[in-house]
View: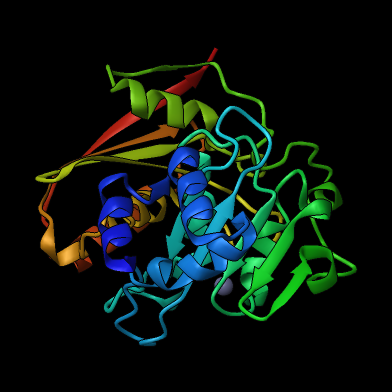
Length: 282
Ligand SMILES: [Zn+2]
């Protein structure tokens, strides 16, 4: 059954819809929290950890909106030829997946292993961090218990938060796709003001990634990491797909992402001209 579910989740790019979740809960006689723990091995199956060989899976649940009950899967992603700082952690992957796909908040995250300090800080950027539940295979806890005496957005006088940030009104130096436009405008960049996103055109379809900044800066997720994580959560290894075009949209006067996009893309063996688009505040 887990293999069939893996195939289904791949096809829906890392999401298990609430209707299917509800059917599974009935069939297996489990509540959703227990189901999430049962599905963690499926999440970890998406992991691509060539360096650590440590497979981590995470599943995020939104309880309170039109998408209520959806499960958003995530897994760790490592790059053999790049600085370790560019690794995407499973919790970041699941939260990025939820955020890109319209979730309004995350109420609960299940993880195969205890979250590292980097991920505790990443999760602390969410508006409901004080209420976030964290379930591990043999323990139920909360972000506050794992990250007491926290440093967060308010310490930098930032009153925005991830999942509840102001949507930007932007114009662009050239026409971009609706999905890319939506992701740029919703990107979370309260510290640098570089509202940005990237679109990768591949032989397996288009993948968009958005920028998620963090009060501690280092745990921020770049748009390229965000998009590559989406490719991974569609079940593709990065070396299996062919990227044919890259469009990077960044904010006028605030650009800071081109270097990392070039470095990571060239480390994957590509020599592609990156289409640079400038976004202007209205
Ligand atoms: Zn982590």
